[in-house]
Image 1 (cartoon, rainbow, N blue to C red):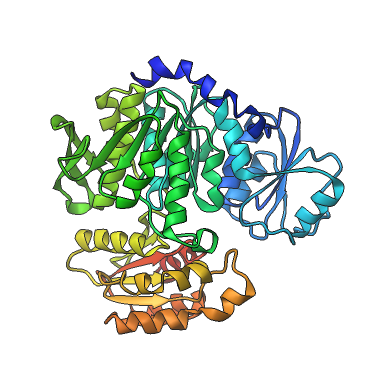
Image 2: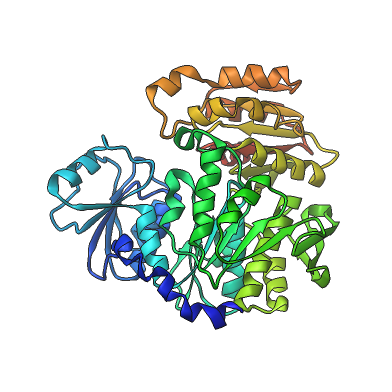
Length: 481
């Protein structure tokens, strides 16, 4: 049964959850976002603005995302001191990063304003359409962007909320006229359990967010809960070569299709070539040739993302020629192996990688793309707790770089105790012991200066991290001019 035949009968699956998802602001309602500049928060704010809500909010940092929201009519302040919380506010939305001591939040609580989490709003929006939720430790953003791009090019005009900006389809969010809703499903704080997916994807399951989950068993259990939410008449698409997914998918009550680069999977990708940053590969469905595909973004991990997207879009009913054309023109999301500039024959790339596995696969893709060039990696660790929990994994993930520079750790959700038990110096020592040519330069501006004096023509510089390390890439390109 494909999606168009089966999903009309799925609303009974969510009827019992109606009381759980009563967070839907209506046209004209005033909604205040605390942390509105976050990638997910800004995406939902865009959708509510387009639906006619009055949107305001606060964030301690301004960005292109907040600028876009202001141009759309949102009122945004950077104080977060409670002074902009008015009695006209009907609802306050918070991200998982907002703590109870935030003054905006304390003021909202004192005023008796309804406070909901971002993921609860996202779940309410998804409930009104046919949900497609993409989960996993890595690859969520790219896979979500691929699926959204295919559906948009196929004329289905989906609504989507993606954890990264995708210029080719208008950014990180879109309110579509179609009945499909694509959402990147984050596992932190078990947020993805607020969603009501009728199609689900699990790209991989690894240790991460250990400040919340404590261990891999609890992470697998959460993904198992996610798998159980997919509608019985729907589809769960999973990476076949992940032992943790195998455990989680046992909880699924729907059809499951697998994908990998191995012929034992339902969807099998065979890489034909990967030169000049272009992946050429064949897709087989149940050992039957499906078609040949191309991707303009490097790395075998992106072939896997394309397999997941192809499985989902085929189930929905998109023909393979439309899938093929959309993937061939797909240029990726910002901060995912994004070439910022080429100056003096020095290539500067920025990437969001902030987990050992992401660093490893990204540097491996860079080495495949630039086999003869010197690769510099500038890494800004994200979270003291993540750095502490995954310290040894980080130290072993830089082997494909010729020269590595560490910045200070970017704090996010870290308490004072975490900040005293970990620092970049420890990561530097651990990585140096792994026979990596590594240097520790705490401040980003000093890294830019050091690189400008050291990089040579034909070198490649890759900045990595989930914080503001991207500034190094842009500042370096400007300085090289």
